[in-house]
Image (cartoon, rainbow, N blue to C red):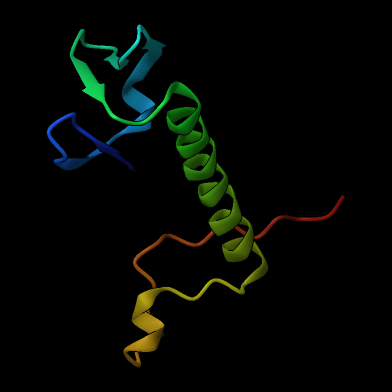
Length: 93
């Protein structure tokens, strides 16, 4: 989820996978695939950056999990269980 701000200052989280397009006319309007529109304070570039960072964080987490170096918040609480399904072991050919 990415965090964006309505014009009245209220922040909310938006699923970037549902974003169809983002336009600036002059306010930034986020259009979702279901036709919903949100006018936000962030610029088009800021929204695009947030989407890129969100997707990069998913890839980074997957990489850490694949290498066995991923530590969730559960590890800090003394639990070694992960709520995420581990990647299957790849066979070398």
